[in-house]
Length: 183
Picture 1 (spheres, rainbow, N blue to C red):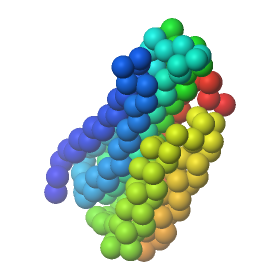
Picture 2: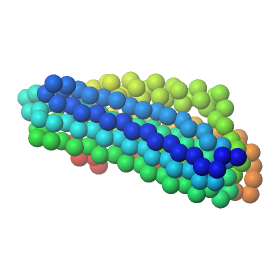
Picture 3: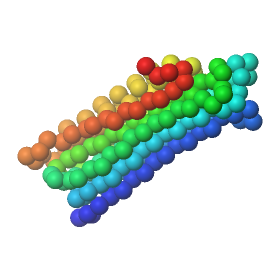
Picture 4: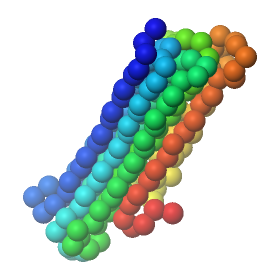
């Protein structure tokens, strides 16, 4: 049995006059098995700086982190953050989105090949969206849709997890920040 596990994922983008468009995403799956304690940190930061309304910048940072842990009395420290900043950047679009999915089961559990295939397809579509150039509001909506799909895949996967007294759980921590402001 592993006694402690740690995962940290971070995506950072910085768009400016030299690099008008910066877009990156991360999609990680960490399967820890049985642990006494786990710490998971997921972060997305996007900055647009020094561009004008006539010459606007676009900075997009998106991070999807999936963590699976097992144990009935596991201590979990989950941190999920995003921050989008426009620095003297009139008309710029800046979006940072951090999506953290925590799957907790009482007994060891692994995502099967079907779940992994579905997650790989969602990852591919996230890559396409990140590079798409969609307006920030549309991008937020579509990325939220992908997050819902991930949640569905994970719920289906834990439905097949070994049964115990404690019910398996899937939790989504979502944090979005952006300019224009995220609603």
